[in-house]
Image (cartoon, rainbow over all chains, first blue to last red; front, side, top):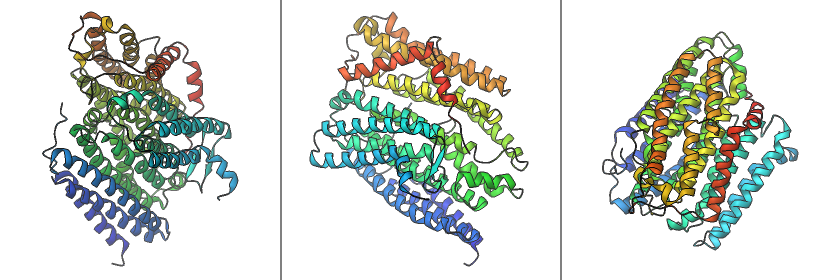
Length: 100
Length: 487
């Protein structure tokens, strides 16, 4: 894994897996995990580009992204719990009160 | 470099962060009463308005190693956004009482959201934009789901969160591609890089399209709009109003910055500009046509306003199209955003007066015969709806006029014709509630509207602004002409 472009391919693959998870999975907790997967894929690509350009910016950005991801999952879990209390489900097919 | 002189330039942001900490402290002491936190919030927002006006004469400077820009544009937007938030804080006390939202964290989250939006409009770095986007969005998710026992509020929050989270990641992926292509995330350095670059564009174009995609979603341009009606309907009215004004303004300012990311004068990027214009044309026409036709079918006032904001996004994109050829026309976008925010703020403050709880009484039929039941309310509501239509002598007329003129000067006459037709279609949707209010007899079962003193004071100020700016728009136009976009 010394070639940064290989890292980039891995990163893009993981990102697409995460995106597919967000779009197609029904369980909200899995959707949350998929969003985290997407953010971690971005970390990998930042680090790879950082290595290509020989600058440290990308690696520092990756640290910040981890912090943001943690905050985001905290808020997301809170929302899922609030919804579970009122609807008794974490299945995104079951929540469709707001319709045209 | 960082020094103490720069600290003074960061005044508004420092005041905001101190205010956030103060509200956090106050709400930890007295959690079940809102008043202390509300007072701290009002003081903070007023101070932010004063300090941002103080920075207005500073000219354009960048601080914190070029990550934050202090310019007329960022200060004016910040002044405007904190003013609108102040209106909502002062005017929605009665609404929060009615909905039994007594937790003072509401104000803390609100200030955090304004803080994120204020960094977003002044960020000169794609990565800082991402952090600011998250700082703005995370409190917004919580605010949308603030009525925790209402399942519709929860559903709206979950939908907003999943979409926002995924978009944040997509934006970041775009940022990393642009970083990979240009070697920097700072807007100024990307612009410099684009001047002398003549290699392969693939990496940059993919990154740029991802970044644009994320923000087109955020401003809800059709076909990326499907989340907006649901979120608008589920969120508490005061929060919906904040989203429609503060978040839309911040997101659109960033969208304009992102469209001016590279130097389109250079031969490498000139063909790309043409395809970008094509993209905006498609998205703008879809937003205009989709927004205005679905608007007239809506029965719920909040959903109707959501489609109306999609329609307005179409006009704004039309203005953006004009500015890509004629950079001096950029004031039309700022003027439109200002006028639209004033009207929307007034409309949502109006809706928050409804006496039914859980936002139930906001169907169109609830307005039936309101002119006989509550003439004052019906008159002011009509003023706001007429401004939305774009009637002469209201601010809505001149906002549409400047945007149309800027696109005509850029040679987009065909699109202006489409936009004018859509304005006529949309006018039917806005005039229908007025007709219901004036021509029908009141229905005893329909909801009634009672506002608090503060609420009514705010609404009267906004309605007066609508009419004054509709008769004398020159002052605001001159002000917005000074707001230049510096790459």
